[in-house]
Image (tube, rainbow, N blue to C red; front, side, top):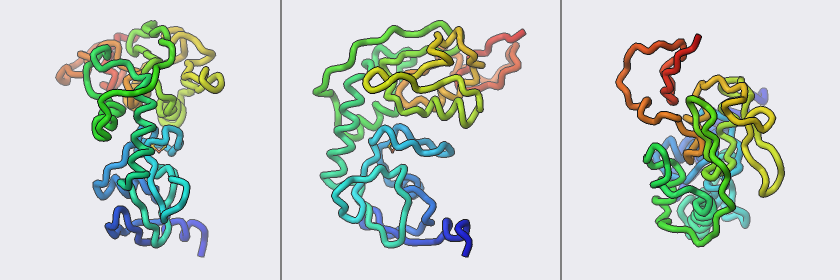
Length: 242
Ligand code: FES
């Protein structure tokens, strides 16, 4: 059999004791989502390659000593996966609490909606964090359509993948090292001075509100003709392009 055939073998696994049919090229998180079992996840989105860097999706597999990131672990026949054991829940909650430490308070967000980090923190019963936030960074409001608040960034790199792999623009990157790591635009330029074309893919991908529409109300306008060649995307800037 070719390797392509082997990559799509029909198998059965158990998640939280529930028998589930799947294929061995599916991730545990993808399978869980498909059958309605919730696992926190912040750096994974359907249709994008998994990065495995937020670690919110940790689960137990076959009673192994080390927990697995369910977005990156593929299923294998007979696998026993536990998403809700005390050990898995403790790991998920700790990751969310650490990320919450840096998150700006909800009332400071420009659009006032609940983002994905807040949603998962609520699901985990986290109302507050015990950890101290890192020093605040200056906001970047240099772009007419997208505002940047790196205090909310969890370095999930979804925006990097959205820009590079979905839109093939390659404006956003991850730069510097360790605790100095941050998302940058081109050569660490202000977003407004970068080669960003305001497609809005990064805003749609961001799970924490680090990238937001400059004008959130524009998103809620009913469909209407606008003086723009830009499709009516999630940014909703409706800019006039010449
Ligand atoms: Fe799995 Fe982020 S969603 S590591």
